[in-house]
Amino acid sequence: MTTTAINSNAITVIVNGERVSRQVPARQHLIDFLRTDLGLMGSHVACEHGVCGACTVRVDGMIVRGCLVLAASLDGSKVETIEGVSDTGEIRDLQDAFIARNAAQCGYCTPAMLLTAADLLAHNPNPSREEIREHLSGNYCRCTGYQAIVDAVETTAKARK
Image (cartoon, rainbow, N blue to C red; front, side, top):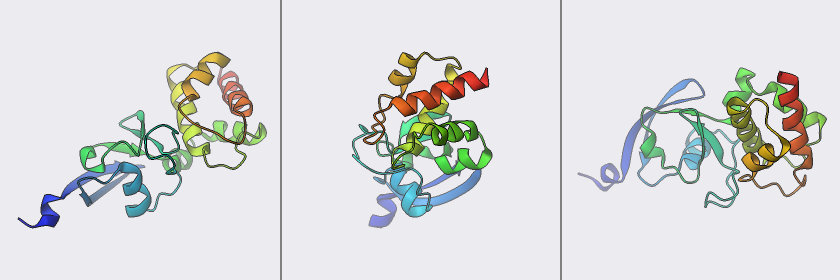
């Protein structure tokens, strides 16, 4: 067996509704697979330790840190990125609220914030401001001070009622 065969795995995943089959290095993280192999640049790489949340994506309906998940472990999984949920219109109202509330200043954290906020609203359609803050607490933002982000999520929750 060659070194390449030992250190890589064949996976088939559904990424944003499209079936993708690839050989991936055994130690390649999901975020690197998405960005480098698939050209999906919406999710970002920052701390690479799962602390900042910039690499947040959905795997089988659950938000995860793309820098902590190995791509090779996802054979048969469904992966959704900010590009996918944007294209379907699933988060259009959240995106509009982020724009209206100026909650997307530099934009680096925005994709992860939107996915995390969508996750919160899917599980708790009427969150308090404290619940919003708590759910978003794993996503760092250095520009907005979070007030505008919490306002945007709260506005969206109220509009959906």
